[in-house]
Amino acid sequence: MKISLITVVYNGEKFLQDCFNSVIAQTYPNVEYLVIDGASTDKTLNIIQQNQSHIDYLISEKDQGLYDAINKGIQQATGDIIGILNADDKFATIDVLSSVAEVFMANPAINGLYGNLDYIHATSDKIVRKWRSKPAIPEDMEKGWMPAHPTLYLKRTLFEEYGNYALDLGTAADYELILRYFYTHKIKTMYMPLLMVKMRVGGVSNQSLKSRYYAFINDYKALKRNKVPNPLFVLVRKKLSKLGQF
Image 1 (cartoon, helix red, strand yellow):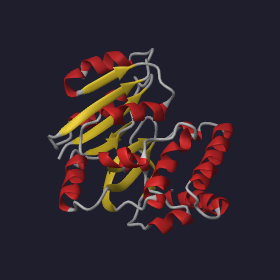
Image 2: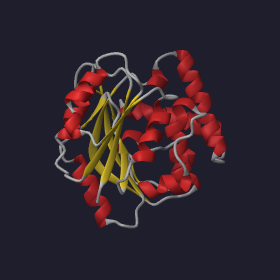
Image 3: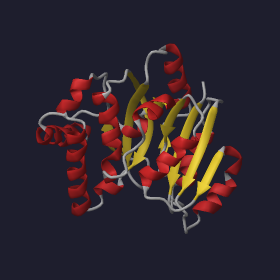
């Protein structure tokens, strides 16, 4: 079973090598690694060049943002399974992809899996938040639940059948895709109780009050688009669920 792993980066020189190191250290052998660069102007391309032997596909060109770049990676991916590792994040252990492959091979009926995530301080491994997920059903989405997107691995055929990331919803594109797959189309998924990713705090949706406002509006649009009832109630539950992660 081949896993296609996509890393999207733009001016990510600060943490990119850490990300690469965690990919290179993975024990699972059948990995296709795709790096999508948004025409970086810092030392990102130099770092990519130094790791070229571990990269199966590379493109560096301007894009319409994070999710447009991810869509480019999906279009080029040839693996059975597709996952994403952001350029400033890293795998928690060396056997994450081996565990992903084992679960998919042992459960051929599932279309996706997800696990646990730690938010870490931007300049250290100090844990800021712990996102611990659970086995879930589509109705959990009506209560504000969602899996940690960086831990999500999906069969490539899902993108062909149900579409890629929507580019009109800003930072809510991952939430909308999860709603579309988990709630609207009710794909079969499995929770893997494993710490998979260490994610640095400071994502683009949490940088300012203005960005948080737009994130809220786009989350609302994502819920409406997928016909989730009582979207404002869902968003309140979604925000409150984060309190238990600290």
